[in-house]
Image 1 (cartoon, rainbow, N blue to C red):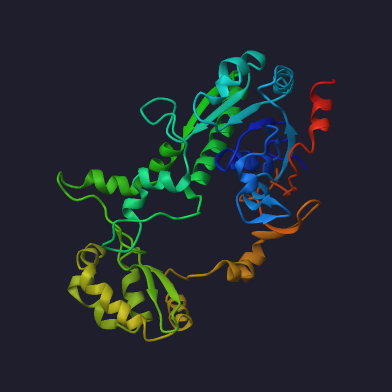
Image 2: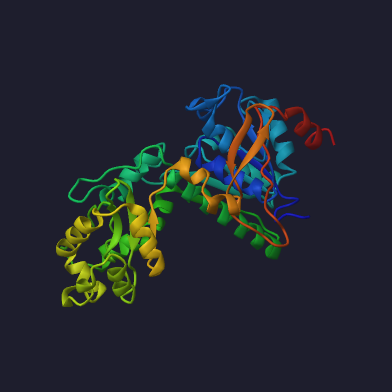
Length: 385
């Protein structure tokens, strides 16, 4: 059965996480992704943990690809790259601004060889401005984009999500959106184009609601501050520690859910308290209400409260660790995580494609390979034709 991007070929000159993850998603949609590396393996190979000497980051960001080694500083190998590009629809690179141009593979050069190319330049801060030449690492972008100023325990100075590539992969998803849109535009117009995407822009887009809070506030009002797990706009909407030490996240997002929540937790008097009848009132009275809930929810185990909230149809979730999630019936029933047999790394657990198409299915997930493993195959296809 045909897949969404069958027949689309991607020249994938990416490294680390942002670019490789985007091209991996395109591969899951059916594109033929040619991952190009230099003679010296990129950093992701060496970031622990590793399987058989290869970093898990590199393995997980490079499924569904074929691997080619080219020394793009070498004139002959650069000529081979252009021969391959003639057969490609998409070119993705996430080097620092100016680096790919020094290799002679900027948009102007590539589009002369393949005028219909969809060319993506991804960077941390953009190609202009005082920070244009700086490298981007997810936690540092979290700090700069304002994310860390609203993340952390209430009253703290903020904190980062360490070793969690949320902004990296958000940028990756935006690259995929842009490539799909540009391919659709090319079908209408016949023209390729250059797409620029920055991690900083993606991070600000992701924080739209928090930025709205700031810009909507009266001039001179303090900016949004860390609230731990709590929402700034709805109360109660946070995690509570229960008697067994486990955490329960509750989200009362509408006023009609408030009486149901009070019934579920056995505090009907709160539903009749004028201070708490509306969400606006509960937000204003957060400091009075939340300590009462924290004290009360600490008297029973998490399963007790979860069952009662389920009966009242109040949104909630237990905080689950990865080991529980891996074997959870909901995950198993939907096949969100599966096992993949690989030649070089043994059997590994992988995420399934995040989309389900009825007519043009994504996947199946194919194992990636070692650096340069498919070089001869690719060169034979694209150069010796």
